[in-house]
Length: 195
Image (tube, rainbow, N blue to C red; front, side, top):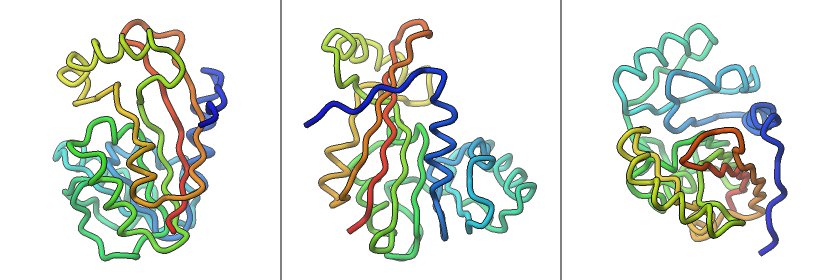
């Protein structure tokens, strides 16, 4: 497999916004937090968010109304989506698959709810693809990040799960965070198409 192109640190926020802005139609945001992505979404989408944390969900509901989204956020997890099959045009997740219990189940559920040709758009902490030293540091750091950073597993790679779920044309862009203290981070942006 070819290495994904490296992205400059300073470009990440713009790249995240550009990626999220590609979502159209009925958009499902997994682990929507407090609505941090609202400014990146295209104004004409029909947004639905999931957020299992009650405090974040309350803030998310308030911010969703401010941004003109009419659907109340749902108390649900990515591994068990309360949507009908083939009912969503795009699934968006930013820094979510690093925290879920079962990556394969979450990705399979995203595939289930997407219409044929629907998009999955992900920004994720992942196991460093280019450096054995970085991967070793991430594996050592993961027990700490799981405990202190909302369950974040820095040593995951969702690409095999995306492929196993049948996503095609998966584009991957890689970015390493250089200016942060340990633990090291590697961030990949994924865009895939549901068959």
